[in-house]
Length: 186
Length: 369
Image (tube, rainbow over all chains, first blue to last red):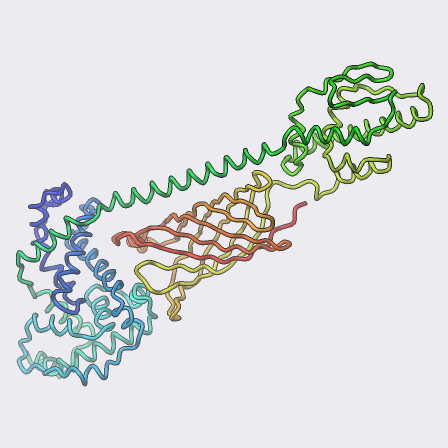
């Protein structure tokens, strides 16, 4: 990602062209984050735009010793979590025990026979996972949150966090069981 | 064929996700641009919040200042004159001795013929009618003056008795003008009580009694429950706190107080989930009004959180809230209900959130000696 100091300064001064340029540069990396948490692509775009506004707001706080991409991603993750927290249906799912077994029955996913699984298929699979396991998986695997941090952030216990992660990983493994064996062959 | 372990699994997922590139379209920027145009100016919002809070604070200070000076001016001349009249009613009824007449400006003693100017302002009288306001240093001086007054009154009685028996027998006063001034320091209720020599002891007892003298500061300790709620979360969190209590009376009804608190323990939410919370100290500073045994107060609270180096990167260490409280005292125990409100971004990279807090505490107030 090529983000120069001139570009950042231009965005801080309100130059629309430079802000647009920054948006294009950040679109794909931040969309990879937002898409994993969202229920659909439209929601992902909303989360991305909200996060981008916060990035622009906080540009004066950015320090050059930090990598801009990592800094922007951190803001995005927090922004997405705030947006999710405002969603009443998401809050209810966090506070209730998800029935993962029924999810497997209701959402029979065809196992891949082609071991060359594309990244798009993986992304779609991640997006379709049930809550709150999906959010916990994203926070733990992709953002590197510990279970303690997840429990504080989501207002659940550490035990619940581990349980959800275990369940949602099992779902992924069941869906991708063919792939695992094939990958080993490669 | 061995299945992948957890770490390999995680690395596989991360690698696949990082490979994926979302195709960009101009319509996404159009949407973002529209949002940016209508996005409220955050610094202006913060400024607006501070302007409102500062205005409210200035209004509260003005209210209490005006109330304090208004309260101090409640003691008016008529009550001073009234106390003099009462004294006169109770004083020796001898035409040869003291002839106090508040309507006339002169008075002649039988022997000394020293004129007394009753029109002279006696500003100190106001303070003596409210003995609770006098601090320790002034209290000692006042006690000294009062004990001299008592001696003077004693002499007056002797003179009175002597004159009653024989008009020619008397004991001259040292300085009648000073004597009159000193007598006016005596509160009205004590003057009414003074009738006979033995009742002078009522005055001296009243002066020496410990409850007649109040220390300025009121101290206490206590603790209670601390609840808070953030605008973006449905959960209500609970913690415990311990606190000390320091109150300084500004007048009969106004006071200033601070209640340094320390909150600790886990955050327990309504659905019984727990999460850790750093140790925190809270410093409220409030102005209050007493309403009999109850009081209301308002002010600010400053919070400081003890965070480790890692936590300081993500979280802010301090916050400020506006505070309002209701207190009710029964004997040495005080019940306090406190509400606090503030705007803050708890994490450094988050937007501003509303936070409401409710604290319920019980305090033991140490008796004054």
